[in-house]
Amino acid sequence: MNTIFKCLKAPPTKYEWGGKGGEYRVFLSAFLLLLFLFVAPISNRSINGASNLYAQQPTIVNGLKSALIPGWGEISMGNNSGYIFLAAEVALWSSMFYLQGESDLKLRQAEQFAINRANLRSYDLSDEVRFLMERYNRSGFGPGGYNEFVVTTAKTLFPHDPAAQTKYINENLLDESIYWDWGNSENRVQYRGMRSDSIMFTDYAKAVSGTIIVNHIISFLNAMRVGSQQNRTNNLTIYSGFDLEMRPFVGCVVLF
Image (cartoon, rainbow, N blue to C red; front, side):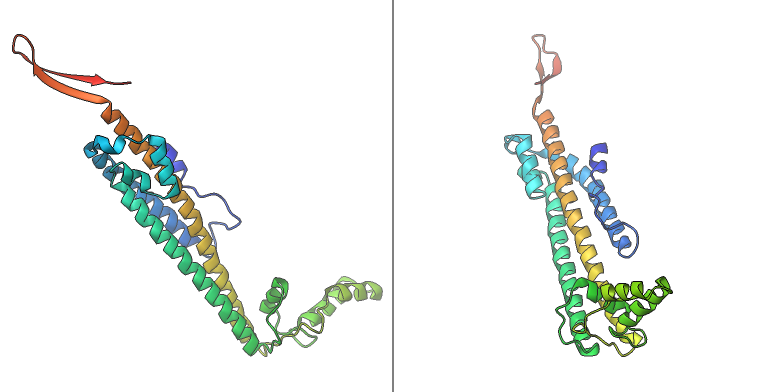
């Protein structure tokens, strides 16, 4: 059991468990923990009633089946816990597709909003420019503009060096072909919110994909555990009868 609990920790990614969306990941971890706690008693009941037919395949074969499709190996051994892993797999994949779809929808909404409100000629922009659009009201030299910020920064960094100012401006100034103007901060903030929502849903989808991997691992370990317990059960033979003096007796044979 200790081995299974250690596997509940998903592989680390660049997304931290805290911050925006952290509550969703904590919920997924709690879900897996409850899943295992619920599966354990069902597994024990199913093992006791399993027939020899289900134990004919080697344990490792059923373990690999569960690693491929969670629950497959357990179901092959007549263990009802496999249906829980299989249902969890379907639910997790459905959630991931839904979350990714929501992310794509928010991104398309942000794109259309930018074209309509920021007077964009085209949304075929780099991620760096889209990042700047979230933080500056316009691209040019007007108040709140990115190019205006570059000029101000150059004068602040090199107050007595015009050559250094010019060099800094030339290296960081946006080309005239890149243009946007939100008109007001409210439009910019709304655009940033749409893009943040898209990133959040993508973050959720990646968390679910990690949970899918964990579900495969736990199902594999559970199938191996079920197979081992069934093998121990099948190698135990209990018999009873009467000896020559008609005294009742009970005996057992354990095959190692």
